Every structure is written in structure tokens, then in C-alpha cells.
Length: 174
Image (tube, rainbow, N blue to C red; front, side):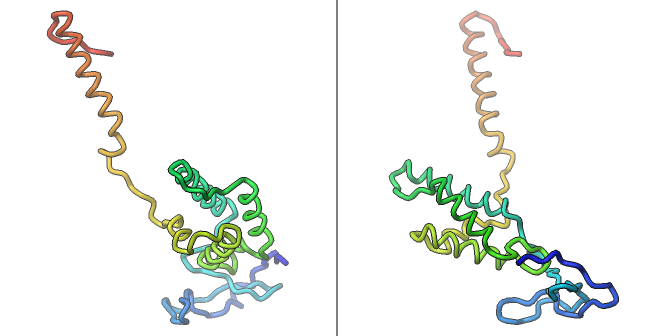
């Protein structure tokens, strides 16, 4: 059951490590953390905070679009709207899935992949992990403006052809 977290007084904070990896190694110094007075959960202060359902819905949408493109190439795996809804309903059933107070993103990610493998078992965890890219691709100016530059070059070429046909030196589209 979800708890409406009520932070303790600042003088009652607990000194715990700010981040501990899966092997149990402390990666940062210990700092004071708030805890919930009602349930006792310690506030998570790591960098990978929990995300809302919309984040995972977007990831699932990306997977669905990828599989639709692959289906046009001959693949037979698709995510239907029913499967999409079942995955999202399963996430909503998990207690405290979006609890930013005590749950890190890495735990959410593992649970999400577990649910995906339950409904779409034909792919590995690595396949699903590829959609969680922390650094989205950055495009340089050349690749972003490729079509714009291409059309400008075509317009110039067309203007030169028209100018030659009309016997003029220059012809411009403005």
C-alpha cells in the first residue's frame, strides 16, 4: 500500500551512504537523510531518481514503433494496443512503483523489463535496455539541415536553368 510520506524533522535525520551499488560498496560519503515517520523508508538521494508512468509508457511506445518498422521488413512480432495496456496495468499494480522517496530508477527499470519479458518473451533484456539510452543522440548542424541545404541547392540549380532558358544571367526565387 502506498504511503503518503511524511518527512522527519531535520534534527532527526539519519546518517547513511548517499549511494550504494549492487555489490554493497559505498560510492559516496555518508550524508544525513530524511526518513518517513509513518513507514520508516529512507529518502533516496541518488542521481537516478524514480520516474513516473509516462516515462515507461514512452519507452514502450518507442519499442512498439521499432517493432512496427521491423514488421514492414518482414518480422512477425508486434505490440498490440491490448498488450500495451496490459503492460501499463501491470506497472500500476506494483506497489510504490513511482515512489520517488525510496525507489531508484534502476529498480524501476528491472521491474519494467521483467513485465515486458512476461508479455513479450521473445526478446532479451539487452534488447529492452537499448531503449533506455541516457544520452540521446546529438545531431550536428550538417545532418539536421541536410534537406534544407539540399532544397536550396536544387532551387539555385533550377533558377540557373530557367535563367539560361530565358537568356538572362541570373534568376532568383524570393
